[in-house]
Image (cartoon, rainbow, N blue to C red; front, side, top):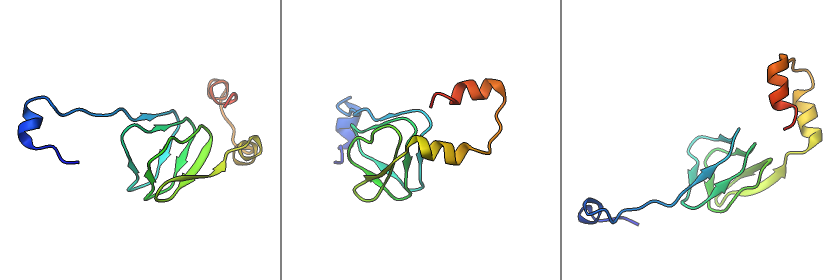
Length: 96
């Protein structure tokens, strides 16, 4: 939808909120449409068009964007198993 410059100048233009949670990775050229909520700890693949809400701990891709995988406890253990964190950082991430 395009808004004519006269409408923009008269304050008729408005935006619809997009909510993006913590620790979210959006791949290059990702489009997020107005009104969408993306949960925390989410990965959105490159070139995706996010038209619906994406829940926490998900991997989503495509046009339209769909959840293809939920990130499980096993995934977290596998990807962080050999990582050494200092005590302060560990306190932050251990409950994820």
